[in-house]
Image (cartoon, rainbow, N blue to C red; front, side, top):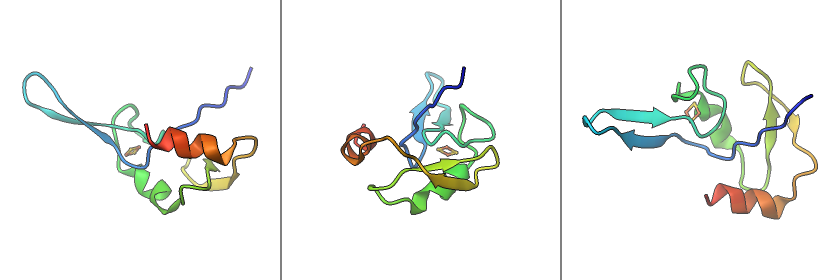
Length: 79
Ligand code: FES
């Protein structure tokens, strides 16, 4: 069974551990070192808030995501 997972973040989330170490968590879903950010989010930075693209495993855009209401995407991107 296939599963569609939607990531709406365009940049990583900064987390500081109890020891004071800084960790960057991937919020775009394209990281090669997931769950840690690898810098691959630069690919999604060019997306507008009104579009949502699908990417292949190499992080190349393969088309527009369909079936997702634009209002829902805008709401998700605020999270
Ligand atoms: S946030 Fe996903 S690679 Fe940086």
